Amino acid sequence: MDLTELTVHELQKKLKNKEVTSYEITKAYLDRINEKENEVGAFVTVTETEALADAKKADDEINNTNDNMGNNNLVGIPIGIKDNLCTKGIKTTCSSKMLEDFVSPYNATVVEKVLDEKMPILGKLNMDEFAMGSSTENSAIKVTHNPWDLNKVPGGSSGGSAAAVATNMVPWALGSDTGGSIRQPASLCGVVGLKPTYGLVSRYGLVAFASSLDQVGPITKDVTDCAMLLNVIAGHDEKDSTSYDTPKIDYTTSLKNDVKELKIGVPKEFFGDGIDKEVKDKLYEAIEVYKELGATVEECSLNVAEYALATYYIIACAEASSNLGRFDGIRYGHRTTNFSSLKELYTNSRTEGFGDEVKRRIILGTYVLSSGYYDAYYKKAQKVRTFVKQKFDEQFKKYDVLLTPVSPTTAFKIGEKKENPLQMYLADICTVSINIASIPAISLPCGVDSNGMPIGMQLIGDRFAEETILNAAYTFEQKIKFRENYKPTFKK
Image (cartoon, rainbow, N blue to C red; front, side, top):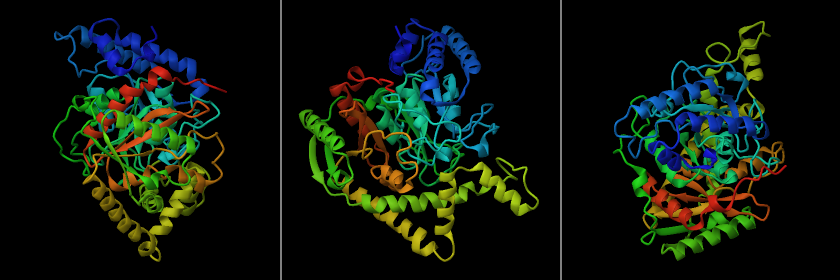
C-alpha cells in the first residue's frame, strides 16, 4: 500500500486504528519527495530531520492518549507550507533573493495552529516571488513543473503547494490567494483549493502582498480534506485586526452529499470570448450533473469581469508598493555590497533583491498612488470595488452558489506567457473579482481536456458561506470521482 496515495481522512482512520504510525506516513512522503522533487521542483526547503522528529513525538502522543484519537484529531498528519508563511527556525524566502536567508523569529498564526495539532511540517513550498504571478515562473529559486505535463506550468502563485499535493509529495498544503493564487494552481494541477472569506483565516505572519486581498487557505486532494484543514486554520485572531470573530464551525458536518435545495447561478459573462472551448464544454457537462443531482441551475448576468481585472491590478499593485517599501537594504532583506551613498544602498539593494515582476508591480503601484494620479486610478478602483461587491450581493439574493471557470485555459507551456505580462494577467480574469468582493470560492476538478490536462470548476459563495460551497463541491465530487479516474502522468 502506497500511503502517499491516500487522502488525509483515510490516513487519519489508519492512525486511529493503529494500522500505521505518523513516522511511517512522514517517511513515505519524504521518500516521495526524494523520488519526484527533481522532476517537479515544488519545494524551496525540505525539513526532513525536523519532520521525522515531530512524527516520533506525534506517535508518542497517540500511544499515550486513552481515547485513541478523536474524529477531528489530526495528530501526526504531515503538511506542506507555502514559503510566504512565517515559520520559526525555518527559512521563509517568499522565493525571492530579497529574503533568501531570512529565518523568522515567530510563526504565522496558521502555522501555530498546525503545530498545535502536532502535524509534522515537511517543508516550505515554491511560489511566484512575493506571491506575484500566475505560473510559479517568477520564483528566484526554481521553476515548478506541472506533474500532469512537466513541460507546463502548475499555475501560481501557490504553484509549489498545488504541484506537491498533486504529486503526492504532501498530503495537503497551505497556500495564499490574492487574486486566484490558490484556486488557479489547484485547477491546473487537478486538486482542490479553497479561498476563504476575507477575515475568516488569520493573515498574521503571512508576508503581505496586497493586505486587503490576501487570504490563507487549503490545497488538498479532495473536498473532505479541504473542510478538515479549514477547521484547523479558521477562527478569530487578536493579532490580525481584519480577523472576524465568528462562531466555531465544524465544516466537515456540512458535507451532506445533497444539493436538491441548491440554487446555482451561471454568470454568462464568465463564459464569453477568451475562455477555451474545452473548458466551457466540461463546465456545461458539470452543470448537467448538478441538474441530475436535483439542483436548480439558471443562467444569470454578472457583469463584473471586465472591470475586475483592471481594478484588481490597480489595488494590488498599490498595496504591494506600500508593503514592499520595508525591503530597503537597511531594515529588512538583502543588502547590496555595492554602494557609495544612502541612495545607492536603497537602489542597488532593491534592484538586486527583487525580480522583474515584483519591480513591475512596485513601479505600477507607486504610479497609481502618486499625487497626480491617485484620484484617477486608485480612488476610482476603490469605487469600482464597491460596485463589484454590490453586484455579487444582488446575485446572492437569488442564488446560493455561482458557477464559473477557474482559468480560461488548462495549463500552458513553461515560458509561453512569461514575456507577455498582459497575457499572463488575463489568466486571472475569472478569479480576481472574488478577492475584490471578499467572498469565498472553491476550485475543484471537473474533468480533463483532450490532452489529459485537468480542468477546474469554481463555485462561489456569499460571505461566510463556506459550508454551502463545500457541500456543493463535495456532492459533485462524489458523483464524478475525479481522483479515481485520473492521475498525473509526469509526461515529458
